[in-house]
Amino acid sequence: MQKNPVQCQFVAALDSIVGKWKPIILYHLLQGKPLRFNELRRLLPDITQRMLTLHLRELEEDEIVKRVIYPQIPPKVEYSITEYGRTLAPILESLHQWGKAHVERKQLKKAENEQNETD
Amino acid sequence: MQKNPVQCQFVAALDSIVGKWKPIILYHLLQGKPLRFNELRRLLPDITQRMLTLHLRELEEDEIVKRVIYPQIPPKVEYSITEYGRTLAPILESLHQWGKAHVERKQLKKAENEQNETD
DNA sequence: TGGTATAGTATGAAAAAAGGTACTGTAACG
DNA sequence: CGTTACAGTACCTTTTTTCATACTATACCA
Image 1 (cartoon, rainbow over the protein chains, first blue to last red):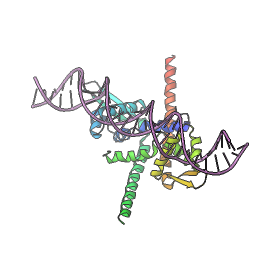
Image 2: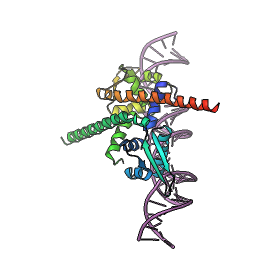
Image 3: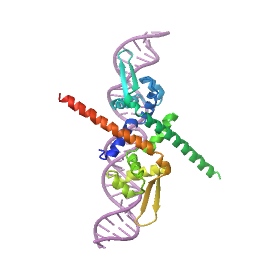
Image 4: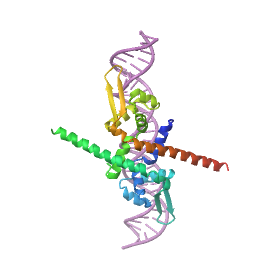
């Protein structure tokens, strides 16, 4: 589908971290502590079970996240970042920083505009 | 809609660079030379006029790309990266590098699997 | 005995993103 | 006089992504 190799590389990278919830899932897992399914759910109050499952499966598929099932009842499944997943940390950190600055910049522009309107 | 501020920051950053064609548009514009609408189209053979227009408008809205209209016939419009847009360069470069390694890694795994199947 | 917690799956609907095709006006080229 | 190039817009369809709700099995707790 994507013929251009440069585009492919962007697509591969972005596929791994994009998705409405992936960055924030990774953000929590990058804190270091393995998290159970419902712990993640509590950290992301607005996500549906379905989306959490789907995104975790994709991250697992890419070997960014590791899934460990403890054979007990009620079930216990722990998710943690892999060594490979950790290579994404600097990128996510940059994105986070840039995004923060971008939001602040937008709010500043908005405030300026509202100031001008009342002139 | 996005209540979590951390998530907002990711969303803001990703909104600015995600979209099927945005990274590759930015990649070309980051080469430095301003590009005309149809020059970009030729660089992205599979994009439709419509999608190119929409993505460029969004990038312009975020002040990542500058649009200059030359009042002549036939029309001439040049797109270039702004100073602000240039602050995305390191992030895009990292994404590109990571994506490249990720693609190679996947191909390696695939080759290993095929090797095992023929054992 | 009924409620809660665990980690999901199944199904259908809604929303968002992307695509396809046709169309615009003007000028230069052959 | 017909064609091409330019930079789009309009309209509609398809694809992809996300959401909402109901459902599963088992154990523990009161």
